[in-house]
Length: 196
Image (cartoon, rainbow, N blue to C red; front, side):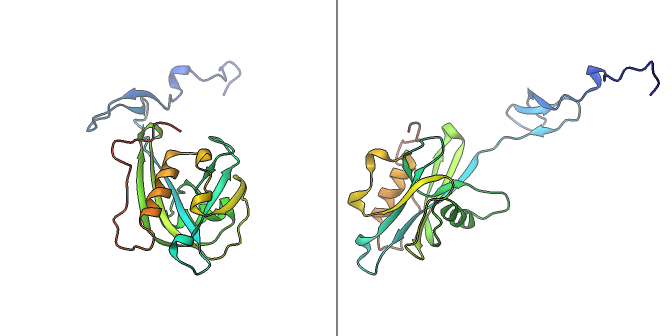
């Protein structure tokens, strides 16, 4: 560069990145695109994974204690939820549910089977919830939890449940206690969880 050349790039020569909305060739909806290089930024739903994890001292299945975590983060700080969170890249949904349970409640679990798959279009989420057993009753709050607890059905803090999908999973889990012959649940009829 010589002294008389400007060090400021010509704005028309600077790539604009995927900031323009357009319908790419062969597609049917608007996407964020870069006019300079043609890059298409696809935005897809996120997958949430979690578990209804229980501990039982060897009694009847009705004596299960359900692991709940009081949230230390937004949204819904201070409300109770199942151990759950976003699936990581290159992770199976089962591995994600096991990891989230450890991160939120320092609890080890064994996955039994898929309990439910929920659709939350408002948040562009698909939630995959497993039925699982705790390998030990030893639990403690992780970084995203204020406290954790093992709750009998009648002791669940229903007025402090964080999300509708948690309520659904708890009720659907209870409906199939002791059964292995059920199909995975979904959203209750007509409900899209468009509320807290």
